[in-house]
Length: 229
Picture 1 (spheres, helix red, strand yellow):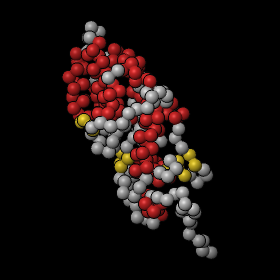
Picture 2: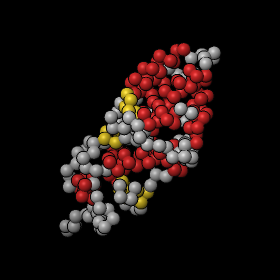
Picture 3: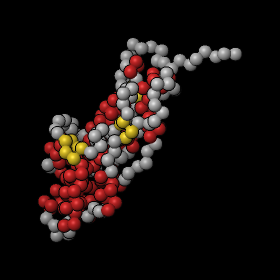
Picture 4: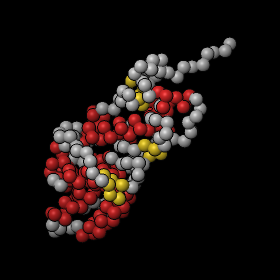
């Protein structure tokens, strides 16, 4: 007995208007590569931490900003085939995963598991980009000079560089794999104000945008804070 071919959907195209260019269409047609999406995740931060543990005074400043929990998570090993499969289920029209049983979504409650504080003012946009390697080299210059007697200004400078690497390597990596946006410098001017910004929503929105781009046929890489997947 011959069974009719399975219908990959969607059965209605009034809402999912991007289906023609979506990865799932080409999966069913056998026109998509078996290789998973490539992740642009620079390792400058983790490599620096492995060789140069932060001084206790820098750790104290990072704890005050609310970001230190991310450093404690450290680098995670991710399943790129699983991430690719999830992206194939992601719909940019609704910003949800269309699973066989129901729709699913990543929420701010999921972000809270990382220690973020999803409240506060919105994070501003704009700005050019700077090389991550240059930031790391400057940190290598500052790190050996940090002691219990080091001036607070020096500690704050080092903390800003660490956070800039965190933004460029972990939370907001881009497809260049080597650059970080200078837009974050505005927020790093006053370290005491960092917990007031809505970083959880910013990280989540950035990941949403990345998945929307990666769900299209022409995409070969993905960026964003992928441990949330």
